[in-house]
Amino acid sequence: MTLDPSTNTTLENLASEILTHDSFVICGHVNPDGDCLGSMLCLSRALEACGKRVQCVLATADPVELGLRFLPGFSQLMGAQEYWDACQDSSQDFPQGSSQDSSLPEAFISVDVPNTERMGAAAQFHDACAVRFVIDHHPSVVQIGDYRYIDPDSPSASMLVWDLVKALGVKPDAAMADCAYTALMTDTGRFQYQNATAAAFAYAAQMAAAGARPDVCAQEVYQSRSMPSLQLEGVMIDRIHYSPSRQWAYSYVTAEEFRRFGAVKADAEPLIDTLRSLAAVRVVCVLRDQEGVVRGSLRVKDDALDVSVLARKIGGGGHRAAAGFTFKGSMEQCLEVIAGYLDDLVEGRIS
Image 1 (cartoon, rainbow, N blue to C red):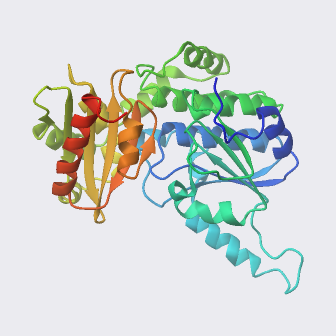
Image 2 (tube, rainbow, N blue to C red; image 1 turned 60 degrees about the horizontal axis):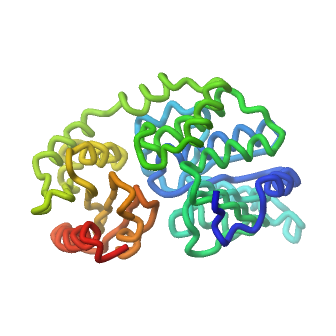
Image 3 (cartoon, helix red, strand yellow; image 1 turned 135 degrees about the vertical axis):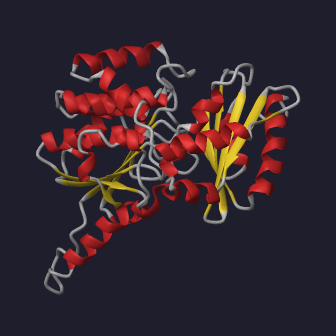
């Protein structure tokens, strides 16, 4: 374990400070994945077990991937903007000059998100709440929050949350275990990515012992795809492009295809794993255009390459093995740019 230099507390001190507050809002990043949602919901349930008032919020109002909606507590999630508006409306009930000038929660907790830009509408809570806590496994580029615990070596944010739950004095129940296990399972790519360390398996065993259901979690996440998702996959497969050396491959889907199939953003999430399954390739990229920009997902299959470096060159970020970015331009422009960067990455010209 090598903590990020911006870490300024221990998990034990983080837990002690959290317990001094009564109300919380918890957020993750835009386009939440299994680690983001599972970590949020696990921590939320633990805080409720401590008698705290908690609301988990989604950074945007976009639909969540179908296979993650089974997570315990998912139905209680609110859009961050919706919850912000509700807090502002409630504040109008306080008498003018009252010491309680808003109904905002006391504390804000961000999980699995490294900066306010990735928080969407939830960034308003980060700026407005009295105290901010950060628990994450993304390397810190900018410092956010007041109390920060960041471990880039952790295979998932949920492993850190799992330890925090125990530091809060809470015995994880089966619902917390399902959330944390799903988070770990998805961020390690079903325990197939480079971050599937001995520690990852040890924590998975703890979660299973606490009541997590590996079979149910895997079935819900990986065997619950929508028809539009499969239709997008067919289009993506038809236009796979390899480098001459076949060390990298990319493909893409367009906004028009989303409209034609009635797909939502979450339907495109599984596409990168299909592309990554190709033999021989070392790095893959899936692109989708939306709202005047192109969203890109990157994955690698060996430790020699670091796609987070590539992603940061295009205004994104992430981990060595998995990263993403937003390209401001057309799909044609992005395809030209990404091909050059992928060449540079596999040839060792960027690292």
